[in-house]
Image (cartoon, rainbow, N blue to C red):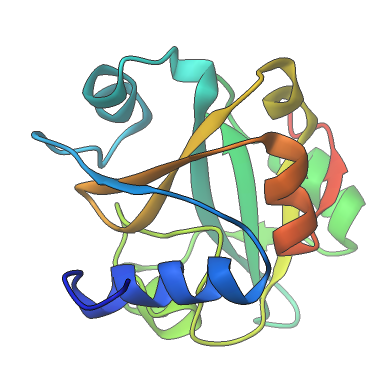
Length: 159
């Protein structure tokens, strides 16, 4: 099942399977690097796109993965209250080191190490959502509750 995919995408497929999550990874004809591009590529609304955003804890240096509706921007002050520390936006090298994915392809599953995950409750307004699958041109569709269960994400408002 994972053989035809690039390594990072195969990692996502393997992680989903290990969590009992059945997904079909789709290769888009165009870049799905941004929420807007992904929405066009899969024919969904921007709100159905899961932005997988990595932040660094300002005090701990710990990575946090925020699964955010493509229609929303993260209120970093609110997230600091949820997570217990202020957040910083890390550089691309930190994101790759923390997740094993390049920016634009960060997936909610398959990170190279365990990562604390928080999920935007607005994603539950949709029957299904689309998330990156390890590259800027690979995505998968999933029911929000299944995504939350597979990632172990805490749930709440991000804006």
